[in-house]
Length: 243
Figure (cartoon, rainbow, N blue to C red):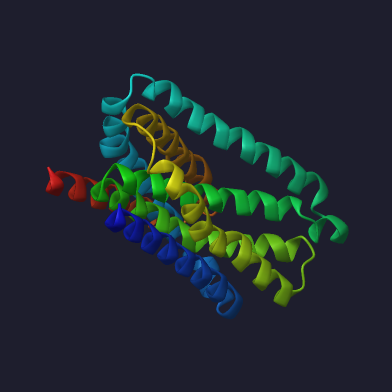
């Protein structure tokens, strides 16, 4: 328990640091951050999707017979939740009153809390599973920090307040989610753990395929496919090397 806890917490702290770096970069080096966000997103998507299909899903299916159902449920939950948040942000986020409200922050914060829970689940299954998940998750935190800060600015936040709230909602909530979820995850049986791992895999696939890859479609870059392929190859190399 001790090793898995510290590794999960360390991964969550690294994720929070990377998110903070994304916030800092977009604030201090806005042009560079905008130019390279697509590459970070594509690489992270490649890692997350490949790791999910090559390792996390097979591991989860071996642990519980309801793995496929939980996999679908994890994906659909993330889809429905993000649709709900997007509807509020898109419909009401253009005014300052709603910009300084809790709706965008709750959405961002809840997503990051789920990231922390994914670290708890995957590191409880095994250190290797946790590391594989953490690679993709940590990489996707950088563009997420950029997107969070820009969303708050567009919603009417002053720069300083946007910086503080972006850090609290997108960065600090990830280790908090890990700390909250780990004691419960560590006490459950293998069938429930497999179900939770399947839910996590569905969430990871959603983040990679639905949240990150559309960035490349909206803002195409010459080498975005190379970045995506590099992420897939990195994941394959790690999984094959472990085998």
